[in-house]
Length: 366
Image (cartoon, rainbow, N blue to C red; front, side, top):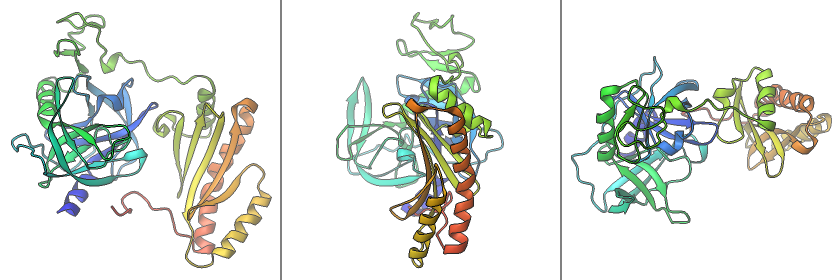
């Protein structure tokens, strides 16, 4: 049964990335919307989606609900996904088995099993489902699923330093928001945190709730993300190399680029000042590893600014720059070489040394 649930939700659960964070969402066909947490999309009018079987794509944030920590995202045109149901009839009880599905730490699709520990946890006047299915950063916004493949909650937060203590918003709150918003589908809206009324572009009064006068921000009010300083320079360099910047952002100061069979991660750490361009290539074969190591050592001798290395059983190629010695032309050269060499070395290691290709989406076992 668990395998069937995992296979179904693999096509429904969606990775969400913004310049500020990464998280999870899931598609509800009955409402034609992607559901996630408000804190996942906070500060963004658009997000980047990675949907099973599709390339990365942008999508609009339609609705934000700070009260229940919910957000609804428009499903891009031409995307067809399976239908899953929400269950508000069944009473969730202590001891019920549950599955939490999501993308923790930016990993692609994980499912963890647990049981309901408490159905009456109260916080800020809202009742949450407490359970011990492991939740980690990146799981936010994913579905909590029962043994009948139905969504019973939205994974929302964890207890810091807790041992698998997670909390999910029950679907009764989700359905309340969905039913209230569906009348105005495709319009930007938000729930007022003060009076709980739904406010739309047509009813908003210059940034204030028309019902109670509280300050309110709709998704359409949010200014597009504009990088500054060293981050802007890094993005300018990447854009000059043909990278789609908006689709490559995966959280603060991180970019992920697909180039042939390789995948390149570019990151900037403001504390250390390090700008790292790194491509994860193939994995070590079971035989002929010595010859592969000799090849890597010889290539490292030839390379000037790049380094080939092995961590665990994976081969990487990387370059390092520091902002205190920053030179845009050098960064441009180094990143261009990592991007071009990544696919080249991947092919050599696989073709000549029998290295194992990096697993593509959908191939990893759960």
